[in-house]
Image 1 (cartoon, each protein chain N blue to C red):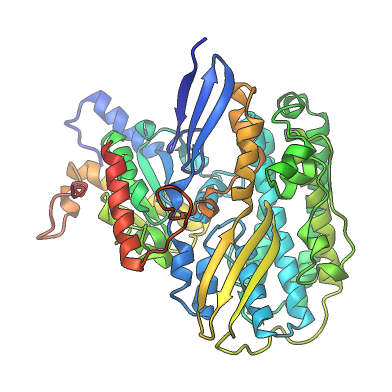
Image 2: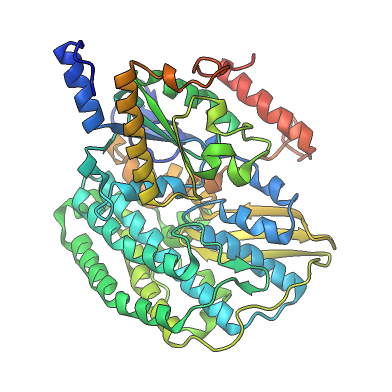
Length: 393
Length: 174
């Protein structure tokens, strides 16, 4: 049978975010996949170079609205290390609580979306109802349901009151009960098992070869988690374990994420009960010395890397953000091959793609050997010109 | 009130439109926070389906288009095309600070200047970064109010300020 190109997106009922797939199919079977993820490219890295350390944190939080704390924390951790600041333990614990609440909201959201794409809307509604608990907690602690703005260079901006701690602790048992229900549902519901088991296989060797990170890698048996392997904020003081699975399919990724939900709940409870007394921040100098630093953070979707270069001013000279979704896309193109068209949404959703993080540009010379640089005006002009040219053809 | 001179089918359609508007969400480069809050609106806690609001995948089925995010240059023409695909009478809600002006992304090299309004006409703006689900519900209800008012006055013309150009989408410069 001849091969056919099936275009999907950027606006499509099955997509929540703008992305363009060119799926090459032979009958119902997928042969290959081409991706265009650049629809949400805004140019944040370049903008971050124009703002000082106070104004850049809110901007970086908006790289992604779902894992905004991840981006904010990765950046301030890097700058604090450059400035050699000693962050008080209370601030570190509050950061950890918000980070784990964010992981919980992200994983519950993902579970709902995964249930939705296989047509199991009951679980979709249930998970999102219970996700409101984490949103309420985040709102109480930080003041916003999304884009929390709790971080600043030197510490956190809000303290937890004893009332907030008791109220948070009192709401955790209910959430725990609901998560236990999801475990039962995912393990026993025929609807989920039929659509998740054996779909989108990725072996351990492939996961390592394509640089997969986060729950996607851990579901293929790669025992790797930055929180344990390179501990930051308060993770080295908290008892918890890394969840892995060996099945390597969508079912495995679901199990890893649900296991992480339970672990996160344990971390939050431990942090709330053992919250150290003291300051929530230290005054930070305005200027950072000349340095290059690689700041790593385990975001809900996997390892997030911020490369930061400072140059003795109150701005960064260069910031490069490697988001987990960017690392995971390659594994999608591999695991989609030889699968059915109907499984595209499940397999794509299984890496929990976040497109607003993902798109980057690099300027290459014609033969692709050298990279080049552009000024702001050139970039601006290029942005206008290229999008118009593309529209014409 | 609806005009009595209208045909029965037209009156029925208008009644249905106000009682059960269908929405379509289009992401023009947002950070996902607004999209998530729109979905949260449809969920049990906020449950906008009690107002008859239904989320639709295709803009061809939608009465209200919710645009999230600053408009990236690549999405500019796609946004206009999607707006053109919607059947009249159509309404647009621009979400959050980004929808209104570009928000924190104002002036970036791959973001159009001036938010959603510079590409397609916007009826309701929602403040916030991101707006809370209750604010989104408020915006949709405000949009329904406009819809009723437009039906009573026979079009959107009454909302045009003196000296303002007719509400047509802006042309793409060649």
